[in-house]
Image 1: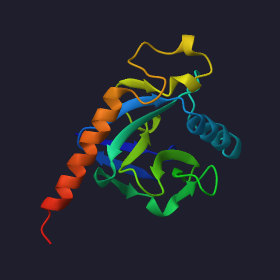
Image 2: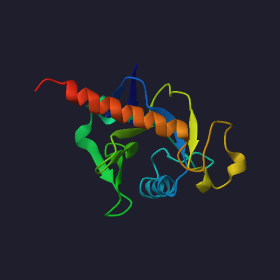
Image 3: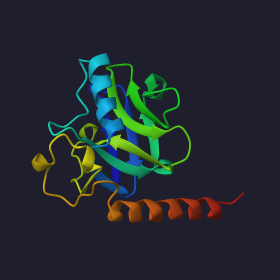
Image 4: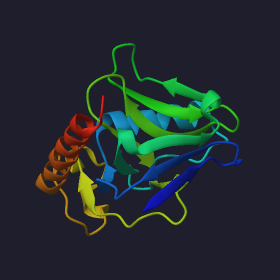
Length: 169
């Protein structure tokens, strides 16, 4: 399976191969704040936030994500100087493309609305931060990280570690 995330103007594209780890909606404070800040800074760009306050993401192992075009246009935006996450926005049209980590976690979260057609949503996470929990879609959910998501992340991390060991030197 190959999915492609394309910016609004088409000058930037990211390809992700293999099955996604998970497709989820995150309601954490950081995702909500990032969506607000990016909407304020780049009002012409498509909002990351859903009407219910969540951010839709398709998570892939970072070794399965690559730029097809426009990598030089990528700008990393952080909430704070010490924030572990970067929201990657392309300067050609100020489109948010994905969320990555400064260090540590091994996955990249492509913004689902950049992918056509988008894969179906599977989980809701960090719902304790949702503005109105009664308005959430009927999907498996958790106030934090759902067990199903944690298991998928652990398996993906193990798979990535094993694939690195198998590569010839």
